[in-house]
Length: 130
Picture 1: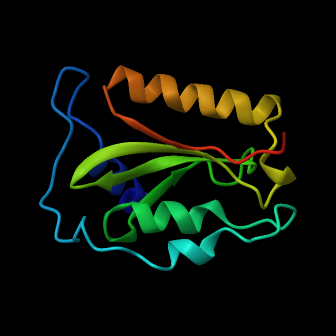
Picture 2: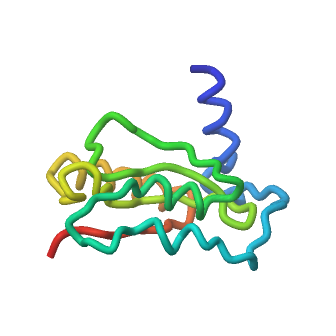
């Protein structure tokens, strides 16, 4: 638990008025990742794991998920893009086809409000039926 708290604190600013933490990014942002072309299936009825996309977008595949076992049809967490902390919010097609229910809506809204308090930018991935 202490290691997880240390990891979370490393991603957050010291206070709501502090700058967002930034580390040096060693991953190239100009290289094309061809595996992204194969991530989403051709058949719209076939689910895929959105966490794979988040891991490919986040620097060095480092993603810290928040409330992983609650409202699993939406994924929330922190990562870094080009060395700066960002919040990720994404529908999870593997669970309930990514449809939002009341628990998922509350989970996402709480996370977005938290990010807003610390001025953390949010990356949103949306893939839902309809």
